Amino acid sequence: MKKLFITILFSVPFLLHAQENTLDLKTLINQSFTYFPQFKELGQALDVEQQRIAVAKSAGLPSVQATGSYRYTNPVSEISIPNGNNVLAFQIMPNHNYNTSVDASYTLWDFGVVKAGVDRAKAGLEYAKDNLEFNQSMMAFQVGSIYYQIAYLKNAIAIQDSVINFLEVNKKDTEVKFRNGDALKYDVLSIQSSIDQEGNRKIDLQNSLNKQYALMEYTTGTKAGVAASDFVFPQENRNDLNEALAEAQNNNPEFRLINDRIKQAEAEVKVSQTSGKPSLVMSGGTGYKNGFTPDIDKFRFNYSAGVTLNIPIYQGGRAKKQLRLSQSQLAQSRFSEESLSNTYRKDIQQALIDISSNTSSLVNAARQITEAREAQKLAHSRYKNGIGTNLELTNASTNVQRAELTNLQYKYQLCIAQLTMAKLTGLRYWR
Image 1 (cartoon, rainbow, N blue to C red):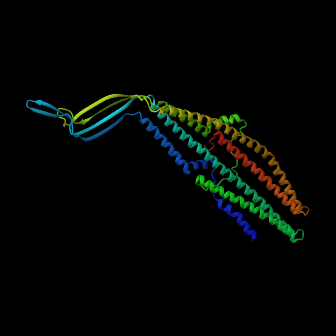
Image 2 (cartoon, rainbow, N blue to C red):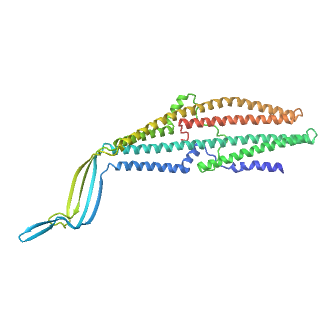
């Protein structure tokens, strides 16, 4: 009964995922771009920046407005004219004043104020685009990490299954020997204890696997599985640090974000430089109003046109202060580019060390597996023929498990190091 319970316990997780649809890494990453809510927000940010450009351009377009007004005034100015014995009084403005007009204005010359504003808005759009790509890169790395963690755990569980199956067979042989008087009850119990111990390890691995499936669903919105064989990242090993750093500076969206911030700061400097500059504005209007002599109450058509030159003289030094602030922000952005390059140099160097180390370790690990399996066969043969002991067989089985898990760990570490290198160098492996 206990054996049946253990068999069912180990089989349930595989029954749950046996019929799952497996998807490749590229499909899952691109699916996360459309599912994860943050990308909807980032996509909306692009539209916002597009609108900012339109608003900035509109500052250089003509302005047209229609107005209508009424004002009652009392008293009003009058002119008295002697006429013989009488005095004639004339109002030069009405008590009731009506005015309707359509007015237009257009800035003929603004010393590049509008252009600077448009350039600043365009720099904001480029930043929004690169920010979207940067977040896609981070999400791709997160999905890739989950993807390969699932592959690692599924392979680790397969190793546990092989160990448990070997111990089950060993237990059957030992039970036969025990019934024939060639083994002790202690031997049977020791093997069962090993089976239970390996079973608990499998449960722990399965628990971790289920958590990774939950994370995959969180990022991609799908419960699709990962093939255990998908444990190779399609990225060549780079041995040159400077070459990898140059590629990162050209392709990694985080570097483009730094460059975008520099361009934004430069645009802000240009905007600050235009502050307080003169402007030449042409304006005109037409409409109907009263107040014209001799019949000041009559509604009459009128029009006007002119040019206005605005020359700011004193603004409390605000323009110079704003310019110094913008220049300081520009210098800060340029220093951050140097800091980022220094950080990436360190991260790339560590990734290259991991790639080289795990590649070399895999060669030794493959030999260890071969040797451990041969030793396991010999131990099993010796035990079956009554020459070896159960302890020898258990140790041999444990050595095989350790060698396979070590090899699997090196594969996983190599895969993650290559995934990290791809993120650092800006490789778009999901396209």
